[in-house]
Length: 568
Ligand code: ARG
Image (tube, protein in one colour):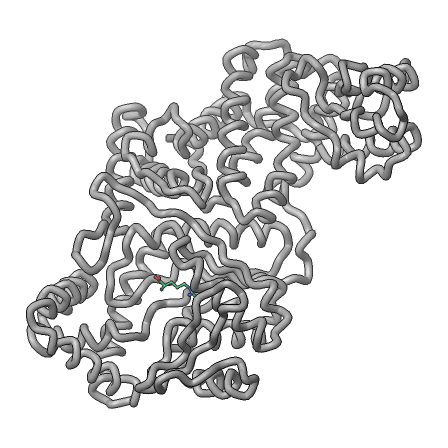
């Protein structure tokens, strides 16, 4: 689409005395394709030209009458707009050629070449189960990772595990009181979680447990061998469980640098903060006053010397900059931590790090199940693993019913089930809360992964019957003129822009919504334009078209971390 816009930009530049890039920016999509494919709004010239917009549009249309470009065949005035009509055959040929030439890289670019983006995502808390709440960070973060990679960025994925803090003191106390080795080994994550819940329940009646927990955590911070031993075991048992979930989801991190990774850098951070004179001592604690910036104060060190979540994040940010020299650092973390990141970035700025402005919090809303918001403390939590297994099982049942003859039903069910969960999340604007509804996420005709995967599988089936597409096939001048075909081609042409837009706004939903449009345009085409039952020239053109649709669907779903099965 961009080539086409640029062509209009260069045609109009002398007529309207605007830079081509400015013309490109101004171009709009008319509400009804019958009116044209792109519209230049003439009211932007009205003041300068001292003429009504409609008169300007009419005059420009006269200037361009009888002319045509490589991709547009006519320009007409319509009210205050100058509307351009695409030369469908030329444009279609160009778009389909580009798609087939780029293949698995169609949509990809080099715009991020030489730049590094660090993405902090997933980051569950050790010894608490990997809950569905962390699903959002995991799938949004992973998709952003893939999107930036497609734009040529060097991506560094970091799992900032919550592997340090008072919860370890609590777990140790609980384990000391009620723990049982055999049960721990049988099902470590669930068992640790039970202990955690039990601790909180008991501490309500017996507040002394809290003191005990604090004391254990202090021992841990001081490197007491017994405490460290507990911590190491709890951590590695939890990590094993997370890794099996990441394997299932096909996710790999460059680093598992959890909060504990920064333990030996904390004194340095505290020293730096003191040197820069941005902190004050208050009742023995170290505080940075942010009132001037409209933010509440932050504590960097408690009076007993303990550091906080934010202190660790300061150390982590500085470490990341020193290690990776990032151009951007993304933190894919729930919106409830908005204030934390505002404070973090402000303190970094006050410390004089000009790269602080390249740190971005990418927030997202909550995920709701019927049970309401999950909380680890009360023990009402939905386990991500269970959700994933349930999705796979449900997908298996649907496939069994719809396609009993399918050869590898398990493989298809895994792809469809995991896709349903991911897409159920990613198709929503991330900032909104998600209502997770089993029936909706697996509805084959709704706005779901299955809907898109089904369109893809259908294309694969047509291509199999036709014996694939041949390199020497071409699109005739009169082919692909049906409205459904033109609409589909225009949609396919938008893919590269959608990837850029998704990266700019950190919104994978841009791609998810776009893929629904592609699948919908494809289905409309498919219902009205026979592929295999058309004459040979048209058949070739249509096969080339659906092969391009296939590539866009595969590439686009790939950016969401979702596979596209050839049969389902
Ligand atoms: N472990 C934290 C939590 O579950 C998220 C960590 C996000 N990353 C960070 N650098 N603070 O709330």
